[in-house]
Length: 206
Image 1 (tube, rainbow, N blue to C red):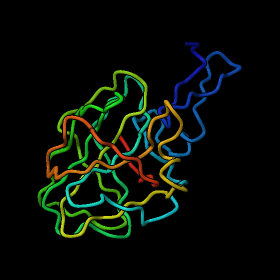
Image 2: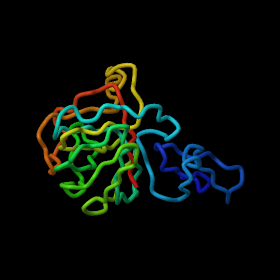
Image 3: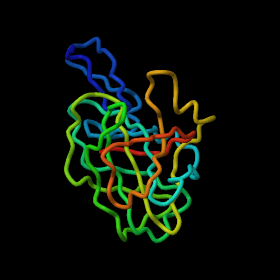
Image 4: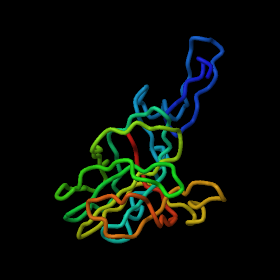
């Protein structure tokens, strides 16, 4: 790779070539996030978040998962979800988890079970992984969110035209989907049965 090409971790987009050999250019979206040379990747640019009412998990204990593009060598220590206008009511279990790029994504690591922690409305909800994860290859990873509560929270994000847009063409990665199950505080070993939905929540890895 030429020294003048800086790979920006935001959205997996490479930087621009510089005319000067000792200058480096980052992708404009990465600069806009204001996290120079920090680990950060997200399912959406913050400027693309247009609603505070993206549906949460379909029922208690289900999973909602969205793609976060990650690049080789990044070390992920925490996961974040943008919570919408509805808070989680009396949560008794839940987690966030990171899954790999396999056709049926495999669990890499999860956050501890959230047995009593509040998930307030209109906030960024961040939890540390049980252990840091170094990304082995550049690709489309999934950040998964699950909660068991009297009321499931909504997310901030964007609603797509329909679920077919999320599914995409043959060979494309599904942008966002759900997995049905009563998972409580334990992330499943794989995202088996991931079903496309027509919305993308704001999820981020740091």
